[in-house]
Structure formats: C-alpha cells, structure tokens
Length: 80
Picture 1 (cartoon, rainbow, N blue to C red):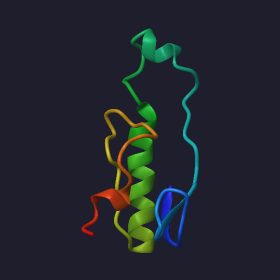
Picture 2: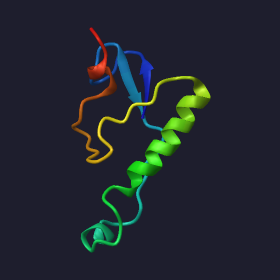
Picture 3: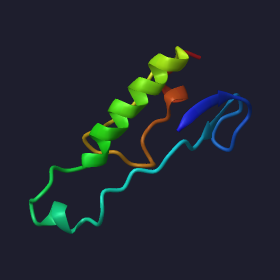
C-alpha cells in the first residue's frame, strides 16, 4: 500500500492506495514446513524499500513476522 494525503476510510487525513498483491502459491508449503512463514514479507520489504527510496518517502512494515490486515497503520505510529 502507498499512503496518500487525502481523507480515507480509516483516517480523516490519510488514505491507502494498493500497489500490488504478493502471493506465493497456496499455504500447503507453509504447513508442510517447505517454506518459511510469510515468504511474501521479504519480497514486500525489498520492493517497498526500493520504491520508497526511489520516490523519497519512508517505508513502514508494522510486523513482517506476522503480517495481517488488522495491524496498526502507518498513521497510528505518527505523533498527533
């Protein structure tokens, strides 16, 4: 997601714009112990940091060890 300065569904000053979706097959490899948990997280970090450097903005990933849609958003980490 990219965060833009405009009112959104979750915040009165910021909105989220989806950039991509990362999915490495089904979860069977995870349950079988064939892949590390959340292999998409490493790819998201690498791509996110590259994009952030390119456009000169900060990169934020709340919890790569347990990514979830219910984690705090970037704006929740900012001073009021």
